[in-house]
Image (cartoon, rainbow, N blue to C red; front, side):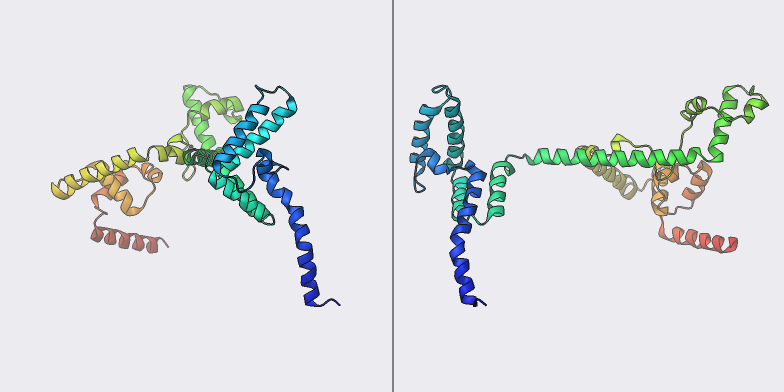
Length: 301
């Protein structure tokens, strides 16, 4: 059995071969199988002026306008790529590091792609793309939920009764018994269902105005409108002490009871008026109302 010292000696002996095997990898990232310095005919210690001079000299020889040979054109593209890498201090430093540390393949590759593609990506374009993707997913999700909810509602007896009532109204009450007993055909159902407004709680019809992207674009306007609204509210009800308008009283009542906007719209006007008269936005009135609701709930049980 080999001793630990002998194992380390084997590793050290194999290390140069490992480095040599990995060496083409660092070149393939930057200058394919070639060495960028060799392509320009300069040493690794050459300064920026020498690199520039070597590039212009080779350009005169291999530029497609000067030399129509296809092989020369291919060589010129390699020379131009090598010059782009070596003329910039940052990319040249990364290339030199890749030559000195060929075993760090993943790190060198990541630095290369970050240098050449990371800074070229406009953050604004990324933000716009992200908003578009999120908005599209949001719209598709809302539309799917709404379609499923509508399909379920159309299967209920209440919906079918509304359809029959609407058809009877359209026919002026002249629909005979035989026809009334029959199932409404699909074409008539589609035509009549378009005239019925379906208020489905939790699955409203998708609206472009509710999408994240649109809301983000309208954010400055929304913030300005909100500030104006708060200022007017404070001025009217805190400074001038004016009585609450119907809309503002509705807002306060809805907010106090934590009722969603769609549910509040479906409440009849008489009940709304009764709730508003109780002035539930005041803490004491809200406590009395909640106590009454608890008593009513116990009585029903």
